[in-house]
Length: 163
Image 1 (cartoon, rainbow, N blue to C red):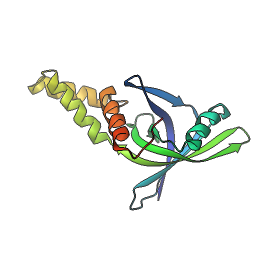
Image 2 (tube, rainbow, N blue to C red):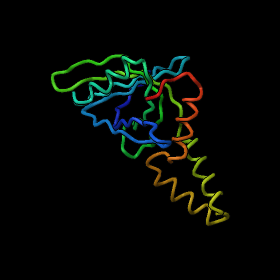
Image 3 (cartoon, rainbow, N blue to C red):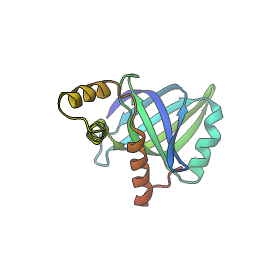
Image 4 (cartoon, helix red, strand yellow):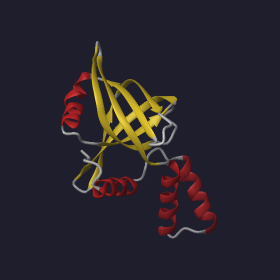
């Protein structure tokens, strides 16, 4: 097992054909790579009690959440994971939400989308290389197109009940 600091957590919700981001403000959090054959991760997010009804509803409906988790530092690329709520624990100053997660989108896939976008824009040669370096260095989140494709793919698979 490997444990990391959870820097930020954002729920990605499909609304009206696009992806809306719902930031979950964290008081604290950890993310654990279980390093098992199922490639399971656990996310423990400590947040304000105002989010309890939202997570309770997802758990009650046995639904899944698509999330972007940023690990360790704000400068890291987000890891997109499909999750389910395992437990919600009341704390003296908020709640702890334990999510079981599977990684669905990695940094390399996002970089591939950047290259595809640049080629589609007609860039080539030095202009392509220069613009790729710029976008790669400034890549703070996934492109809307990438997230919409992942969300649609997960919904069509029938394995997940995304909220």
